[in-house]
Length: 257
Ligand SMILES: [Zn+2]
Image 1 (cartoon, rainbow, N blue to C red):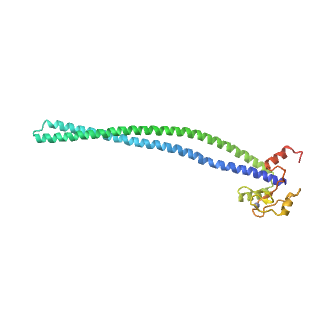
Image 2: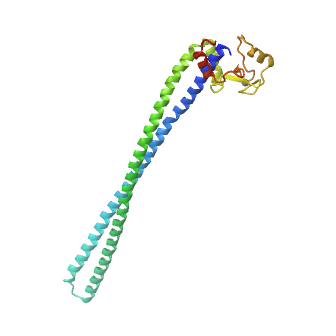
């Protein structure tokens, strides 16, 4: 294979991996936002249960006051019985006292119900606070893991960029521009392998004389797919198919070349 083609193929290998790392890095903000949302929801549940609890505390004060007011009224009626002159008036007052007693009983029932309900609200507040604490702990662990993953991806991103700089240094500027223009159009893949005498990217048949010229030792020409315009390369059967491995083999055994 042409040296320049091999260099482009190495660059494409780095670019493919860079794109993968970029795609993974792009997902981190959403993952972290999801953790924030989980904690925020648990915190909102605590606030809600506390608001409900506060409302019952206000109810309790009102019911306590009701009990006191009816007791006060019953007391007043009883005090008045001493000054009653007629049997009729006495009966009427007794009736008022009885009504007041009933109101006291009702108010006390309401108060008791409220107290039972308040216990339930207290339990709900405690449960919500416990859930918040658990969510905070779990998300703290998740966040640490996500941040560690992100740090690893950042490291890969940096070393791939360094690798890219080395790969780019091997390629003439004009050819690099050419590569990048094609890559931009084709999702980062500017090169396509010829397989079965076809462009493996779009399936277009490569003209026989082009294919022949590509395979000719010493050929210096770059060929493009007539349909998708990608730069074509061909790996002779029996030679290494992996571009990175091929270049590594070249580097480790310079005596062969
Ligand atoms: Zn093609």
